[in-house]
Image (tube, rainbow, N blue to C red; front, side):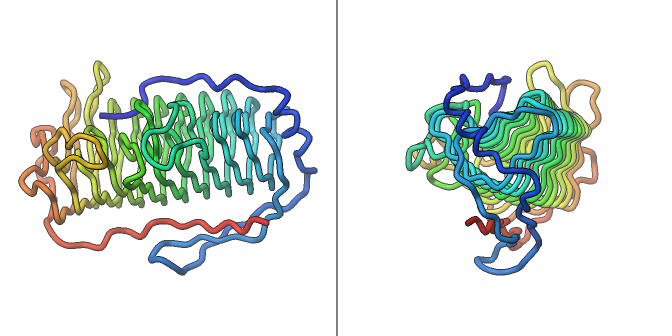
Length: 363
């Protein structure tokens, strides 16, 4: 059911275009945006910040460990917006628009910190599948202990894709309109990245999207996903939150709205097992069970919770969860034998969590 299945190579670097980005790097000591909570508007959670004065830039390539890249308005029509190949790099208070590469691509950049960023893949058509699976808004490979905080990302093949990045921490993410094509199509995917956390997020798709799973933990044990909204899916096999080939993951206080093939799932993948995962206070509503946006109908017949375990593994747990307005109200859990006794799913109306809204005051 999941999207990502492989580690991808970055697009070929165009050194001539990157030179313009290197020359545009600001001097140290420039103040970046300081983002703080605020309330207001459109029923969502708003988080705004101080004014940042952005300098136009082409693509940027890191030059040294600990480099700070900040206050840039990056346009990258042919390359990655930022390519980070050094450790301890900080990227903050930037807007990045990219067309034929990734917004940010990092490899071997342990301790990289990405914060206060707005990233948009401008190389997609108005709706439907993107032109390449390699055009992620953020792609991290072999980056131990990465931090991604206060990021808005839209229209990427996947909006955030981390592979072989144990200990990644992500929070306050506003994600929109994942475009694929397969095996991409997630708003966030952890691939072979154990002990990763995702907190305080909204992952919203719509009729223009080409989705797989909204959130995917693939071969990533002990991951934590909490306090989030996953909204809309049009994949025949995609799930709101998918724990695939992953042990002892935890999903807390997540709402899945307008899902088709399933809201929450914890299953083995191939020869990689699954077990000991928990869904706590998770809720699903307004599901569908028919073709959508030109794609086939869900393959699960409108299942809500999909649970399987590998031989000898601990059973999964489902506690204090809730469903409402289901397209198939009889198809709640499969397989029940994979879930601890005493599971609890209540049928009642509820208002879903508001989406996150980040406000960046660029000038």
